[in-house]
Image (cartoon, rainbow, N blue to C red; front, side):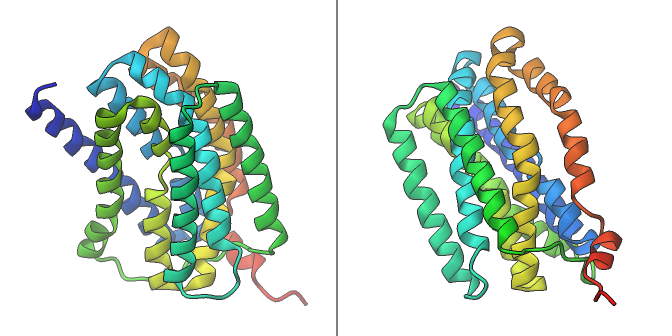
Length: 274
């Protein structure tokens, strides 16, 4: 591939990742953890990464990368659990533990050469159910919005990490192969940067609640999306396959929207009961 074409696609990948992180953290400021979890839990940078793998390499490479996509998110669900379960602790410590665990499992999965889509989906579904149950039992609730003054420089800064990681995954897939890229397409770039920002701005309980919202929405939308693209890529190509996958999961996205409370509803749920 010509270097200038690769650079263009890396820049586009960076821009898409930047946009999602900026939107998630701004929604968190305005509407609380429920709606922010919906914005950040929908398929976003992972599908974009698969799309760019198909664009920069081939549709066959994107199909191969889609095999590891559900498995990668199964590992990323565990990342959210490790971050959110402890009731106390500094952000740096809990995030370092969560990311270290994620990197170890993602590396092992990538090196295993697993090429069985059924196993990938099964692991993803099992991990999602276990993590959701654990966060539910931990009693983590939804948190209403905290008044925050809008700042353009802050929004720009917030999106930078997500954009860098999406571009990095596209480059990684180009260098080491699409199957590894598919696993690392689930890198928690959006979630890590969003949790960091919300912890710094709104505190620990806010970021723990956001993690719970992420897993709720991601379980309902990202897992079905990963299943859909695996077969739609084969029959319709990368571009149409991605679009049709979003159409296919729209009922689940609607359900996720219903399950994530708005700022007002979250406020009512947190009011002391008489």
